[in-house]
Image (cartoon, rainbow, N blue to C red; front, side):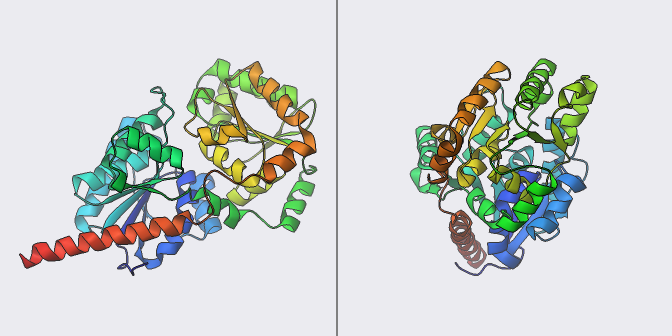
Length: 379
């Protein structure tokens, strides 16, 4: 990879999953990486402590973004990024996924005529009710280099008219994130022991998406199904602060009485718990990818998914309600043989070298921009 000038690649992010997925790319880029955190989801539990855990440098922070409505978040982040990019134009801007922070980064790059790289391009749920769907479609239209995680993502982009030369199938950085941050076996054993859990003997659950937490009947249905499962084997639930607030406001705390509720878990802790869970129940997009690396079965509690690759073997998609328990019991009934089958399957998201591929593409894009700038100055 060509050597890039210091602080020449701006990586715009605003949430914990973006920190996780871009961590290895930031390390590969080294001094060239300039990390800008929009503060979309900033607090010490969900972002700050992750910087230390992932070994990342302190980012530049924007203010006035977190806790705002979607339109205000995007506008505030766009305003802040535009000022940063005017004062110190990068050779390339990198965004990941489909967050409001990613869209703001893409719009800021476009406004300043800066080359844009979209990591995790080409995901589609075809669900217009999802704000993330609008974000990812818009980012893909603006990007100069679209890093598709899978051939299916590439095919979707081609079908939408994106030129083939702008698309590269790189794999998903989530693979190396899991490989890098899964604690060693002795550490995992100590963690399970401290919680009174045995390997392959519990369910791990996460609930945080607005379609489940902001809809009281949906939230009640999810928690009811988890409570029913907890009568059969332990259910461990690291509880997102926003979800806890919704549970309390809806008067649903009694449904958690039989569930092992934990504070938000660090990434390594979560991976350790997921690695030994007999089943995972989640509405997270990232967990749909991580389970394919860990070889664990998953029940996805959502109306739609932009990651159908996970559904082929690892996951089952269900709406909030009795379908959760039915799907969970089907997967649990597969027992040790089912876990061995999944453990032997490769992840559809690549071989763990995505970040190095993406870094090489960034270097090529930045070099081309430097040449254009030199020619313009010479003229």
